[in-house]
Length: 478
Image (cartoon, rainbow, N blue to C red; front, top):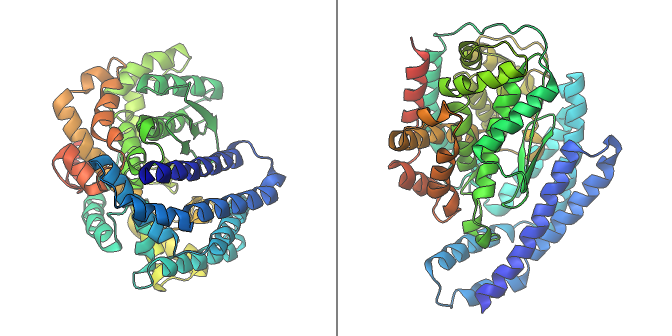
């Protein structure tokens, strides 16, 4: 049958793609510094092979033959999604894909050096190359569409700059009002042993349902998750002076991992074995971070375990620390209120880069002026400003998914908690009923539905900021 032959070949493409993911993990976690030159060639070669395999005429022929078959619903969804991706991929030359891969791999290492020296000028030429490459990629795919919209669609097919704008205007208005209600963050004294932090992070991940036979946890500069339903790898980072950030990051990344591990293995290599979108993926991490690990019940359960490790912290101190609204320079360390202004700032700069109103060399000034306007902060250096994130080394259009995903997480939490009354479970360290609800309503469907339809089926509404704004107001306005 053409369908079976087609997707056997597509799975081989996916296997090679997942090998690229392991190379990426290795680069962040294990690779020696001088391995970067070889890694750039490895990525370029692998991306060329994957692109050639996926865009081959044989795949196109099998798609046409499969369309003549009588397919069930699942097969029809898989074929429709594959054909759309095939048409997009065949528009981009293999040489361009390999060149882009090499440029981005090198740019990642330059970014590390530039951030360490707080020197944006060192990174700027490489970022300009990436911007030029991404504009060219978009022109291959759809020369009539605004280039950033093309890349947003790669992150979430339901998103456009116009739709993001609609959501962000509502969120921005609410956040600026909420920022008037700031809380004092309880001061932490002493050092918090990194080995004990790791022990606690692993315990929490286990309680959430993380399967250590199919995953692992390591350390990286920037916490991330990569992998598939049988091999999923998460990282966090540890600071002896700030133990809460490692716990929040571990919970966040475990949420991502549970989504990857919850995708149906039997559908690997098809749409129904893949995440619905990056926004949906972010919702799976944010529902755990914001509605579990920033909740009172979680800290009432966890604080006795902290005390056993010699940390003299009360549940109230822990809760107050992770929920204090104190705007800072670093996005990944931001409180759940000011966080969204970090995302909106980045989206505005990306849009400016693509419409020509902002030049790469002007990014630090644009960044710093918005930080002053939105959060009242004077950025002291590039490392705490426009060089803090790794994302632009891999392209554009990703940042909006953070706030859109958080928005969706609030909708999912509202629905799940109304049905399951989860706070009682959380106070006892029982988290898996939420895991099971997410498996049933999100994970098992993969990309069976478009992202907006998936969330509507789970919550009764398409993605919108109402639940997020209500959650933040109820929690942060006295």
